[in-house]
Figure 1 (tube, rainbow, N blue to C red):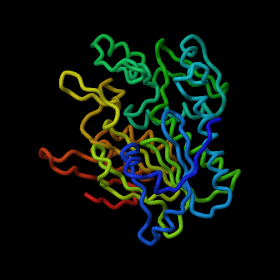
Figure 2: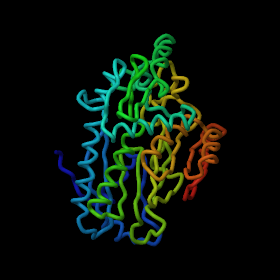
Figure 3: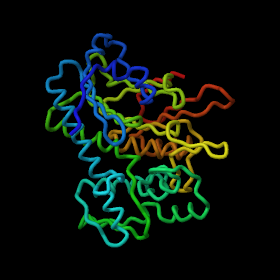
Figure 4: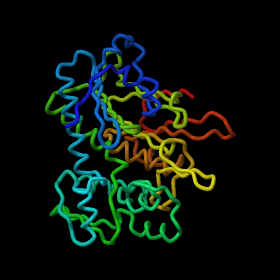
Length: 353
């Protein structure tokens, strides 16, 4: 098992780390610089990114709890990664087109939930889009613009409408060949939820901030001096050193989607990795989309859906589901203009642009 490292929060979130992570963590106005420096962070690489947990200074058992949480992330990676041939998800993708595949309760309920969310978002989020991801080369490369024929084939083998669930047996079957689940849109958020649940129930941890890669973060409780929760600065998708909004998380999660970090350029045009499952093409129109929800799994999935839906689709969704919130970064109306930042729904945020 890889060793976890424990270090000062200010060291972790240096300017170099901000450029890699795309998010800046700020202490509340009433927390002193000394208090913030003394916060403890435990981190380890998993799921092709860095996961970290930050705890208030002096919290008994924090390092042990952080290591237990990161062990849980590794367990879920072994189960749900499409890049590991012996994972449960890879087995399902290989076999479910031929016959129903029985899964354990954890995997079954996650995939069942993902299919329901796909329906709720009108297909703007869909975890059963592995064929599309492969068609564009975003799963192992090389990147490419698929031909019309290849795109048609990938679309025909994508979508939760092709997934049949048998609740009585916890069995899953695909009604077409070539369909694959890819949990890149929710895997980190799900791992954060499970890891925080573990240290809450088994380690009695009531205050922590957990981040997975560039896109997923959840805060539980409130650190000293920050009664409204952990404070996160959401940064400009193209300029990570420029915060555009300050968001507070208390038993809430934030997921962020955008195409600033994963894209390729072909024939003078930029193609991002966030695909619209309904058309098969990269989503366009927003610089970034962030979702706030009670769970990191929901926040991850909805940030992807919001990036695909655009401004009006996200506004309608938040009006119909007031328990969720969104922060959208929209390009300026004229060239080189500052972006517009729109907050919608259940968001405790201060826009800084």
